[in-house]
Structures are given as structure tokens and as C-alpha cells.
Image (cartoon, rainbow, N blue to C red; front, side):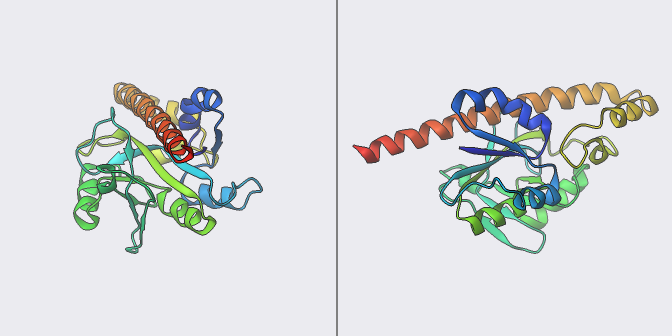
Length: 220
């Protein structure tokens, strides 16, 4: 299995499992720019490979950080949709909106849910789905929920990550110095993100086990 993570935090959270299972694990950087840069590299997997976009997303519907979501359909702001192949029930119903900017406020999440009938939002699913379809991959998207539908993210959070998906620690520290009350919120976000990535790791492990069982069944 080939695992694609936009952020270093996400990649690091899955590194031990990837080593144990023999998966290829790459970091692209955030957003469409990160997926595009990776797409023009020299190490893309061949057609037929199971390629999974894995990481964090924001909820636009009531979803828990303790359950990873396997996306059934990707939606973009132009109304394009990409149904993910081979998604079992009930995950098939989950719809993910790909956005160009983080939905940081509950009001923005509510608007997205109403307009696009989506359950979660990220910044990479549409360019990834488009590339995966063009390349003929057996693709999937698995997301953990870092922020709930009624929660706000800290102002300026998009600037806390560089183009390679690594945390700009000095930016985070500067934000805390300006707003000391931000620290408890960041601890909560960190803890929830860790829980979410543990759920993602468990979901990926189940996907691998299910695929192996299916292959053995066919062989018999």
C-alpha cells in the first residue's frame, strides 16, 4: 500500500505502522500545490497500486475524532464529484468537500454542509482524486477529524505550516505570545489530532487486512 500524507505530523503519526507493514509513506505538503508538486515528481506508483490519501480533516457534520472516515465521494467548489472505488457501506455515504482555505469557523462549516451536502472538508482530496483517476490507481481517502463542526480553529493557523507540510514552530510560538489564552486550545487540538491519527492508523490497518483476506479468498 502507498500512503500519501500532506503534513509531516500526519506522516510521522503513521511512520511506525508503515515500517511494520512495508508500506510506502510519502509527504506532499498541504493543499493542491502539494499534490501538484508530488504529481510532477519521479516516484509516482504504477497503475493498479492501492494509493491512500491519509491525514486530518475538519468536520462539517457531527463526527468524532475517535473514528476515521473513509470518504465515499469527493466534491469540489465547481460541482465536480469523484466517487471513491470500492468503499463499503456505511462509509460510502461520507462526502468530503475540497477547499482552498481552512474552514476555521462554525459558520463556514455550516455553509459548506448546506450548500454541498458534505460531512467533512480538506484541502487535497479533489486534486488527489483527479490524479488517482488519471493514473488508474486503486485509490482511497481516509481522514481523521481534528476539529468538530461547532469548533473554531485559531486565527492564522494556515500559516503555521510551510509548503513542505512541516510546522513553523516560530509562528506557533509567536501566536501564543500575542494571545497566551491560545495555549489551552492548542493542547486540546493537539490531543484530538493525535486521537484522530490513531483512528486513521487503525483504519488503514483494517483496509490492509481486508484486502489480504479478499486476495486469499480469490486464490482459493
